[in-house]
Structure formats: structure tokens, C-alpha cells
Length: 220
Ligand SMILES: N[C@@H](CCC(=O)N[C@@H](CS)C(=O)NCC(=O)O)C(=O)O
Image (cartoon, rainbow, N blue to C red; front, side):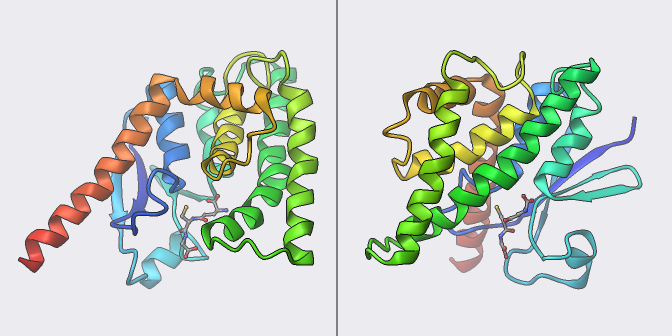
């Protein structure tokens, strides 16, 4: 088996810490118990080598031997194919996981991400565009509330679909956007109580704290 290397930034400012998308991948790797290494790429000075792996100059990407994979959903799918702790073995289960993996990104995150930009910017102006995004997110969360009511995980057992959906909901919850959705909140609490999430979160925070320490020792 080839070595798995996860690439994230060498540093990010404090606000996104704990929400940087390498966390999705760390979480999956921890759930599956797959050995991996984390490498850093500069946040400030993005070189051609970075764009060669991630055409938008973003993170994360993962290398698996001679494969280099970008897009958190694609990376999760790649890992899901390597462990039945991340994706069930049966045809129906795998198909259902893929469905929810894409739904997390294309249906729920498509609504939650623009909404979160308003929240990050503390923009509370009651504009038509803000109302559009509030309504868009509400429509998606109302449906997710029904889906998750009485369901432990999206597809039978815990899977990469839950990693992605929970991580998407986590950002909404950060800005108290789940207050009206108890089933979504309970699902998120279940997901983030998993030891693999806790380890992934702590490791990401430690990674950026170590970067702060290096910067501080260089400037003193
Ligand atoms: N669709 C991409 C989005 C990746 C993304 O948004 N990465 C952020 C970090 S969480 C980033 O690199 N932001 C800096 C930038 O966009 O320049 C994925 O899910 O992998």
C-alpha cells in the first residue's frame, strides 16, 4: 500500500481554524485507521507546484503513491473505496453513500456556504440577496430535518457521507443556524462526539498553533 500524504496550509489566520477542509480528510483517515502523514504548503506564497496539485490554489489535496487528488469530496470517495469503515461493501449502500456525498456538497453546502459568508462578515443588512440566501438555506435544512429525524446516520452505518454532511452542518451551527432544527443538531452532536472527529479537530488546531509558535520564535 502506498503512503497517504495530506496537504494543508502551513498557517491560516485564527477565524477558519477548526474548519479548514483538511479536517474532513483527517477525520476519514482516523475513522478508517489508515496511516498518513500531513505536509504543509505556503498559505501566503502559492507557487506553481501548488496549482499543479490544486488548480484553484486551495487545499486540501491528498497524494496516494502516484495519484494526486484534490476536492474534499473526491478525496473522501477515494478513501471510502479503501475501507468499509467509510463506505459499505454492498452495491446499494455504496450508491446511497455517493448520493449523499454529492447532496452534502451540491445541495446543502451550495446553500450554506454563501450564507456563511454573510455571517463571517457580520453582515446583517436586510437586503434582497441576504433574504434569498436565508430562504435557500432554510429550504435545505427543513428537508434535512425530516431526513435526519429518527435516523442515526445518513446511510445505515456511519460513512464518508456523514463526514461531509456533518462538516457542512458544523459551519452552519458555528453561527447558530441550526437553532430551529433539533434533529440536525442531534446528528451533528453524534458525529462530532466520535473520537476520530475529536482527534482530527485537535490535530488541525495543533498544526496551526505550531505554525504560530514558529512565527513567534522567528520574530523574537
Ligand atoms: N471545493 C474545495 C474547496 C476547498 C477550499 O475552499 N479550501 C479552502 C480552505 S478550507 C482554501 O484553500 N481557501 C483559500 C482560497 O480559496 O484561496 C474542496 O472541498 O476541497
